[in-house]
Image (cartoon, rainbow, N blue to C red; front, top):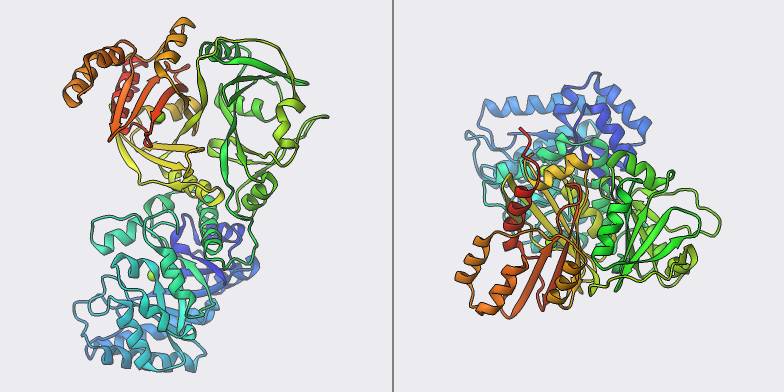
Length: 617
Ligand code: MG
Ligand code: MG
């Protein structure tokens, strides 16, 4: 099927929008009339711009308040339509999209609407044009696609067809089964949008909160499955009204849009691209820090304090490998290459993640087909070319597997040091938390879930002393890979301050697992690691809320441990102090617990805010 997007979805002038749409490899575009009105050129210029970019124009939209008008206004509506037909012919599109009438003056009745559509269809056909009718969820008389279809069916004219818009249908929760009985050739256009579930009027919800399929909570796939049985095979067009998208970069929003369509068709089994399957995320192979010569010794001292052992030295680079349990942390202090350029921009921070997947080459191929950004750099002699793509904030995600030499990266690229360490019982990476700009969140959500076999859980709002932080978990079913994405619209939250410290989005904290937090803490204390102090009040509150024994409470209090319980499951957490106000480690012990201690997050955020420098302004 042809992929398309409505110009209304993107920021910029019509020219900028079309460039972004073509660069994102769409086949076609819906021209939103306002974009044409404000365009610095004639409709014919718009037509030429599209032709040069290789974009078909699927429709001119919207045409409003047409059907069911009383005498007098009815003639004016037809005259308006004729002028649109003129524009369409100049623009080079044969389809006018009509939204159901919202005018209080309009009259109801399917037959009246059908008669109006039929007459307009007749006029369109004389010019070789067509019209398509859409039920707006807030239409005055027609607000259900089944009524719109009935009007189109009764109009009984080859130039009159139906528009199905997933938002209008799914927002109202309309039964989808009627779609299956509509002949595919009577559907002239399909518009797609997802949205979060919100309690508000349809109009505001639609105009501000639509997002790309897979980014929201509407059953867009169910809609598509119903559509599949009609054998419709024309354009799938994204029509997204979203305040963030219209304020964002047209290029990246367009790429997100096309990625969402490709991912959706892959899920439906209708993609012609033969995408390899979503990669099974089997674990975090490594986390790489870029550090300058000043920061590297302090970072390595912190890692040693956490019980890591400097296990390997890169054979040709200033790169060290630190291990404990199944965890690998890499400290890169090279003066050239990716990590160094990252360091110049962001300072010492996590510059790359290595993910263990079933098949690294296939994962990379899938990423490329999903329009993710591949990354290549020169590989020295004896080094592995590890497939990678750009991740959050200009960082990299490397893919490693056991099937190829990539599984032997430590052996191949690193010389063992024989060093020992003060092991603290850390076993694996539990989760990685990334802070980002608020408007990037939907983008990275789609990136991770389209590429990897990870699922989203409903987002949460967490209170920070500087404002609210939105927190979105993405995790593998077996918990082997877990990401927490955080963003805030306030400039004063820890999450936002991190963005300004780092000059961008990135990894703000790494949670490491232990089977015995008390034993781990004993070792960390011996190693001189400073943990985040938790206020006494937290423990008084915990005492009031739980039936923990006095001994247990005393131990939690003595060691700054945060505690959560869900049924019989328990979660214990401590945090290191923040490294240069940039990132920190969390140590967690899960006892059958599946969450992330969201109830404790405000306590942690307040404790961190107290320790950090005064809030800006
Ligand atoms: Mg629509
Ligand atoms: Mg955490």
